[in-house]
Image (cartoon, rainbow, N blue to C red; front, side, top):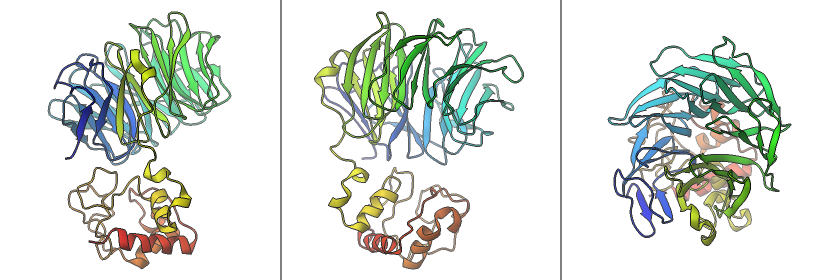
Amino acid sequence: MRALVLVCAGLLAAGAPAAAQEFTTLKGHGGPVMGIDVNPETGQVATASFDNSVGLWDGREPRWLEGHDAAVITVRFLDGQTAASGSDDFDVILWSLPEGAATRLEGHQGKVAEIALSPDGQTLATASWDGSIGLWSRDGGAARFLKGHNASVSDVAFSADGARLYSASADGTIRLWQVAEPDGAPRVLVNAGFGVNRLILDPDDQWLAYGAVDGVTRVVDPMSGETLRDFSLDRRPILSMAYHAASGQLAVGDGHGFIMMIDTEVWQIARDFRAMRQGPVWALEFSPDGTMIYAGGIEDVAFGWPVAGLDAFDPAGSDQRTFLRDPEAMPNGERQFMRKCSICHALTPPPSRKAGPSLHGLFGRRAGTVPGYPYSDILDGSDIVWTEETIDALFDIGPDHYIPGSKMPMQRIVAGQDRQDLIDYLREATGP
């Protein structure tokens, strides 16, 4: 079955708010879940995945939004009819949800890491690894780009009146921009010293919370930058944050798989929950009523827990993702495949929801010919045939040099014996 939504003691009714007090798994993606959002009106969950797709979940079978050419990093509901997603392909796509129509917004020169919507619903702000912030009108037209950071921009947030914009960056700063000014008139609000990954701005502009690479979770004054609270723990980095204003819950996800829940009414840690058995918490979002918290990470599954019962659950996910297995437990050829190929490619016959085409029947196959896979133009109709010699060359000089312009990530296997071991493994594992 292409996808299945499993709910431990009940299934979400199609179109109904996701308020059931049960542990939930959303299964069907072919790669890690990088972003999550929840429709505040319906409770529908949207997931962004390394498999290049967005999943819409409000029943047993998800609906797939396909259009990006690389991993989807973030997704945001803009209203009941529209969502936006940002990707490693440098683009933003506006999705008309009733029919799934896609409008592509181009202009960034790096991956789009996060999206924020202005309070009036008319402007999108996008954070990009090209070091800029894009400002896009919902009505179309060219974007405005705000530049001032010295490294990738990881997150953005509008003030309550939409006049100001906050941005977080790998350069270790949080900057405050005046949206109406031609260049944004930025000033450094916080100099954290380490890359800042996430921002949460209180809807009443009373405080700004941020999470950084060094494990810092701080709350500051949004105008002066003065530190108000510090919830730093000995875990790093902080990778995700979510806030539910009505219940005053601030959720913080880190690289060790924990979700820390902060009660902002009394500014105390209410829960510190080991959510993921393996890997980080890359994405977090609350249900509309605040009773559920959804998370995504290195698994190709999104998880949801009832907040009131978090402490009763064991960590979610498998004991060991295949590409995280102990290297000593695998022959070298399999180890090379797990490290270099497995997150993007399946060995089983197509179809596959992974980011790359299935490798089943690889040897003797012409490149760019797996039915149904959206190849880049450079591979569509290619005359390359996959043999021991061509696979060796691919990893010897790297895909970016062997097939310039392809979607394959830049990576090499330098040692000749490692390449041969991989080839021998693939010959056996991809055969009929």
